[in-house]
Image (tube, rainbow, N blue to C red):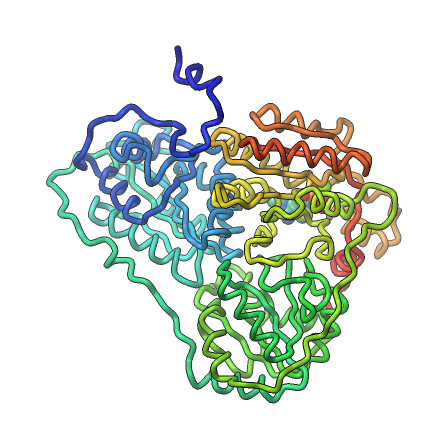
Length: 599
Ligand SMILES: Cc1ncc(C[n+]2csc(CCOP(=O)(O)OP(=O)(O)O)c2C)c(N)n1
Ligand SMILES: [Mg+2]
């Protein structure tokens, strides 16, 4: 009986660690260059390495399986490198820590690039291992080793990664991997890349490698809030008549979340949040203005921004652009961020240069406690009372609002993490009350990030009692749906709901705008955009990969019973994918933001 058949009908293996166990190889000491690299990888204390295999790193592959025993890190086989990277991104969104990724030389890294760009823009750490060569030409196999050897592979991703290296000895490889872990996990976080020469990996060690105290090479980095700047910020905030907090890139820590709420309440500050990044403040708190926006703040938030006299940005993504979008501001600006350490000459994801009056160069979680102390007792502020109206979707056609409303009702009181939402998502449809309630966008606007991010986040949330739920557009899902197989194989419960408008609808709106500007027929906007004739059997795509597929759901009344079945499937360890046929359309605010002119 093959190993595959022997496990086929067993009850659900709930532990990922129990999956893909190799036969013990009885190897205890490093014998090859790649064993040294594997030891260094283990020292990073990374539980998983998401990968798609390749001969360029067959040495490392062997070391992970037969030297490390496929444990710490355990391999997560992915069907596409873009998914491997997205899975690491999703993992980091929950844990704040790097997962490892391995990609084949040249072509594997090329497949991975969009995911790396997404992770970079999202400031998510990960350690990517790649390979090349053999660098020593006589050792290369004819043809294939030559096409998969490049002089400077890191150049492919240097513009959107924090650091890269191509070490030339086992000792240098160990140092590079430790440095890669250290740099990736140090704020501002991001992907790092170590390219391992195939020759180095496969060569026998000439002599034993002396162990080192690896932890000492990855010292914890604590940024501190500069006292003088904290005092200046406190002074501005204390005297503000209309303070406002732009709550941006912050941690998933509950204590830090509660302290942000306390800060806003002490100041009576209005708070704005954004769907591009993970939730940072309870969106149904009376001080939270409007719903979190997608491209720009919603109109109520824009008004609050215009009226504020002091703005505290907690590492807000795009301060200057947001003020411009809101219609301008004369407010004093306090910026809390270390993001400038990452800005480079290749990518302009750093956004427009904001005017700042007080710069606090540390992470927001570090700045808030001393800011609270420096504020001392302030005049008690009346927190506006009253509860927001419960969300009600309009109309009788099945829209994303109906999908959200019924999904939330089906989830009920169970803690739930939205790992991803579609472009058509309405921020008003789902309140966030805990730092893990919403994990933010793809970062780099790279469609196809959704499914992998969802799988990585679901893995990190496994056994947490939280229900991981992703809402993907059909375009997003189809570009990267093979991440579903990885979730199914490793028994990672996850619900993916596809907001299926059978179109790359975002771009229909762009074509409409161009048509209007040029006086051309608006009704042609769908050409080259619609994903129909044939409609894709999304539930079938899921089933084919070992997930449970539901739908297509075409009636509002069928949403609740279908979601109930899908959620029940998750409770039994399954991956569930629900195809919901939604009417194409975005919120009014999103449509207006997309189609407005630049100024
Ligand atoms: C890799 C990539 N290709 C193309 C685009 C351009 N683009 C932006 S949104 C979008 C449509 C996405 O379709 P879907 O996920 O179905 O969402 P919808 O707009 O239909 O709500 C496209 C093609 C992109 N951002 N990324
Ligand atoms: Mg679509």
